[in-house]
Length: 309
Image (spheres, rainbow, N blue to C red):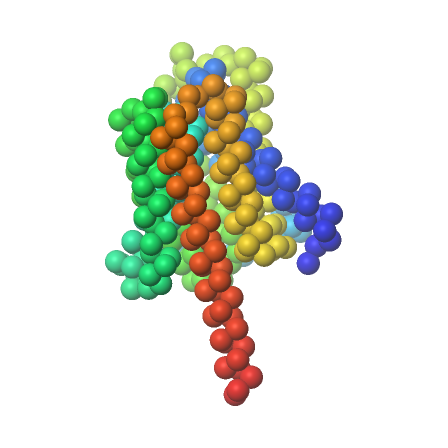
């Protein structure tokens, strides 16, 4: 286990990078107009370069995997990042962040319906305040638009599938998140190389190869560095802290992001939206509490059974 100073530094690093990438991307969309899928491609390339440097520095050890087995994961990785970025581009920061919380209820539904996984009733009930909160926030969002909602909804669905697939592949390959991402990132970047020319201009106004200003290129590069930092810090936090710490950080990021959207981008927030946000946050916190408690109880039962044997 790392020292308390190192843990504090790692937690702060994750907080700063996770929140910064959202505000950086939103700023790029609003003020620069850099194409969305091209920005995702840049993120994947920088993430792979960062991972390559990390494995050279012995941060993690790569594991040999068959590329074709990682293809489905890389496809959903592309969809999840592109769609969530499109949601951020077309929604207010607050609505983008709140709708993302629907991932938990959707994952529960998919795992129950298709993977025969069971959840306790109290865990299932946490989906009620989350869903109600998302509906209230979206309905009363003054910047609500249909296109943004479609992107957000598809993003939630693909993100849920991606997270389930990541868990399955990590068990199947016996790898950690960094070892898996080491293959995902370049594969996903290669896939987007074929997608970008179809959906976005290559040259001309808002084209990938147009003459961007140094400021614009600097912000895009910084966004890519933040994307890598998020992945690296999450990997480090999971390995050096408890699940409770990780989830508390998640709640803090949720609140700061909502506040940042209001303060930085002057996004109006109605009273009904505040109620929706509070409901969603309450549902997330309840879900985290119940799942953490159940996991601890399961560990205790396992220990008791082993002692009896």
